[in-house]
Amino acid sequence: REMHFVGVACGMGHTLALTGSGHVFSFGQGTFGALGHGDHTNRDAPARIDALWATGVTQVAAGDNHSAALSVGGGVYTWGR
Image (tube, rainbow, N blue to C red; front, side, top):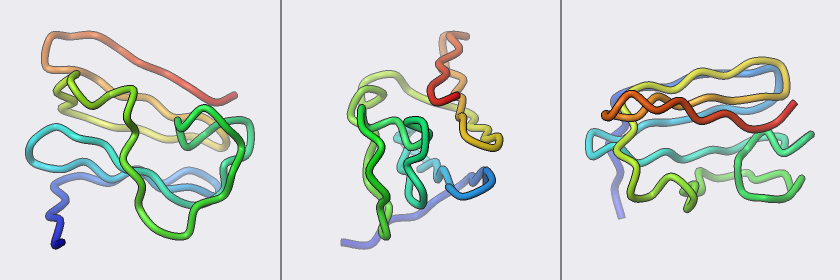
């Protein structure tokens, strides 16, 4: 299935990708939970962050081992360290 990303953010070893429909995918190093999947597993391919599925994300950001998302309603979600 083809995905179209409208935004990306890169941390030290991980990447977040935002779709036009507000879904967030992540891949790379899962150090300190930076990918947002509830574990520390590395992922080679983009994987949807299920915890944000119904949130409607408009922006993503990434740091060394942490990530953040801003929702359409103004909520801020962070994970990692």
